[in-house]
Length: 257
Figure 1 (cartoon, rainbow, N blue to C red):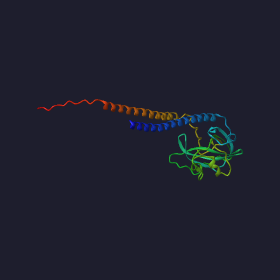
Figure 2 (cartoon, rainbow, N blue to C red):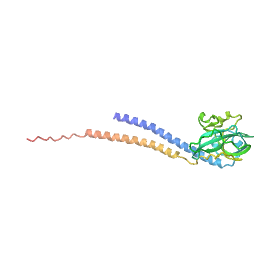
Figure 3 (cartoon, rainbow, N blue to C red):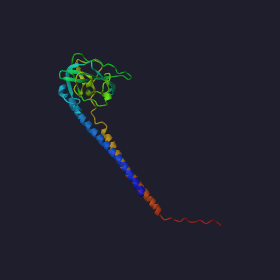
Figure 4 (cartoon, helix red, strand yellow):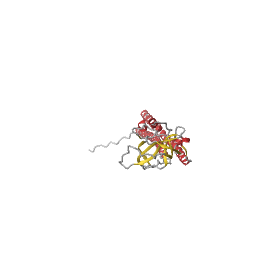
């Protein structure tokens, strides 16, 4: 019996460790669900708010709650300092984006001028399409800096993977505000095949069902322990009953004369 207790204890400890991990993973998915629901509410509300002047929004570090507000700015694009964002996707298409600083009397802001789709195998251009010359008025979504490794955010030969005003600012001869504008419209219009970046999907995503799966795994592990121990107990009882059963002597058969 002692060997059974040792086996059961090891099994219970093993399942307890796995079960704790599964429950924590389920809680993590529920937290992600809550965060996504908050983001959805913020995105819809901000996108529906009236357009405001960019200098009323870009007064602090831009965070998730600021994203997708619409802001306008009037100034001049700095065509001498443009940046190409490589390997981007938008609404299921692959391509690149272009970031150009906009200099205004109220300050300087980076503008993601939009997405350009590339056919399969088509190379990303070394030089970005020129922005409209002279004074322009832009309307765009407020966006926070993208997060990633410095190798992805730091411009190299005018190109990078992610957009971050903190990484771009040291390469410019003037300061820029934190965050950037994702262009929706510009007057006068630009050329180059740009399309705006689509809003994030407004849905709960798969997080709830992922959480259910992790909790089910924890429940299956607990049920497995019960089934395993009950099986051992039944087998033990069967062995004991077999050992306690009287031995019935077999009749002897005498050999024929």
